Every structure is written in C-alpha cells, then in structure tokens.
Image 1 (cartoon, one colour):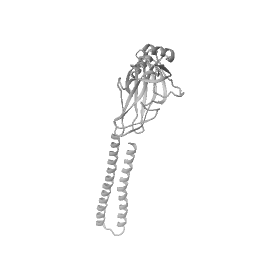
Image 2 (spheres, rainbow, N blue to C red):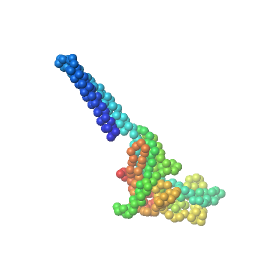
Image 3 (cartoon, rainbow, N blue to C red):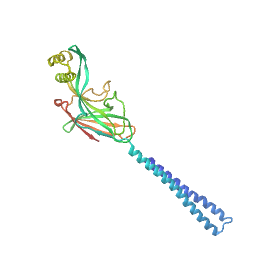
Image 4 (cartoon, rainbow, N blue to C red):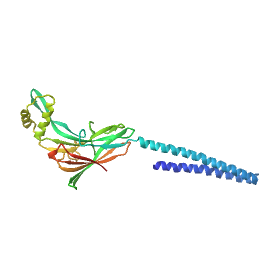
Length: 295
C-alpha cells in the first residue's frame, strides 16, 4: 500500500505540472504578444483559449490518473482475493491422532519358519494445513519455536528451539511443500512411543494376526523377553530432525500440560502462528488431550 500511495502522489504531481506548466508557458506568450501587436480585445480572446486549453489538460491528466488508479485498485483486490490462504484444522480422532508402527528393533524373531520384525508401537498427532485460496501456496514450511511446560497454570520451564523445521506427513526429510488450492497437507506435530513389554507384545501380536499368521501368544511373549529387550519406557517428542547433535532433546518423559509454539510460513502468503496445547499422561499414553490455539 505504501508503494501505491507513493505512485498516486507522483501521478498527481505530474497532473499538476501538466496543467499549470502549460499556463505559465501560455502567459509568457501573451506577454510577448502584448508587447508587440495584440490589442485588449485580442488579449481577452486569447485568455479564453488559454483557459480552455488548461481545462483540457486537466481533463486529460485526470483521465490518465483515474485509469491508473482503477488498474491499481483492481490489481490489488485481484491479488488479495486470489492469494493463497492457509487454515489449520484438527480433531481428536483419526486421521489426526492414530496408532502407527515406528522403527523396528534391530533383531529378527525366528518364529514358525519366518523372520518377524518387531516394531515399536506409538501414536502420531498431526494437524491439517489447508489452502483456502485460489492459487498454489508455495514453499510452505513449519517450524517449532518453543515448548512450554506447565504445572497447573504455572510455567515450569521453556525449551527454546532455533526455530526448527517440523516434518510434513508422508514426506521424506524436512523440506518445504507446495499446497494446491482447496487441497491440504498433514503436518506431523507430536509422536509418542511405548516400549513397555506388554504394549510391544500386544501391538505386534495384533499386527501379525491381521496378516493371518497363527502366532502363539506365550511363544511371542517369551521371545520378546529373551531376544528383543524393550527398554520399558513411554516417551514423546516433536517431529523435528534429531539425527545429529544440535542441542535439543531426542525425547521427553514429561507428563502433564505442555504447549508447542509453531509458525507456518510460505513464500507467497501470510504466515500462521498457532499453539498446540497438549495434556498427556503415561497412564493414557495413546489418548492425549489436544487443543489448537491460534495466536
């Protein structure tokens, strides 16, 4: 808008100079005529012509200014209405919160003449980022700014990030995405893993039962105890890249209320800031209470 206002001032200045610059030139001609051959009657006639010329110059200048302003106005509103617009959607149900299989343990279980991979059970919490505009939202990225930890309504601690990129669901690595008009991308915000023996057993037992493998429950449980050795922890983290040392925790075991402060940017639309308010307990590890709060 500042550029538009500056352009209007410049155009108005041009209009003014066009009209009054002509007046000054004409007055000089009149003075020269008076000093030579023009009489008083001719002077009145010449001034009438001069006024008509000045009015015509103003009409021409204002017409040009009006055309330019109309073009700028239409261009501004066209860009505004067609510009991508990001909106956040979330619900405490699938596909926003769902159980998934995380990375398998390094050892195979040799059972029933088959090599079985044993996966770490967990859940994924994600939000939907939707483009409600009429053009593509380009180079969209999401970053975690900080995590605030609470006891009741009192802040216990704040962990600041760089801010750090958060992973888009289904994407390899931590890269930007383009979101088409009326389409969306899921943003992976939080994961929880449960490596207690019972949960590892139950998750993998159901997984292979669904693949029609007739596995004996006791045999599987003993194999897990003697060969896999789950670490018996329940823990969580955000979907940031922890594959290298960068001064951020690889996981948390904090129980209670904590807030994730996230900002979503794009190269061609306005940023969106939001807070994910999460209440989580190990006793109900796969059922976090999540709310989306916009700044």
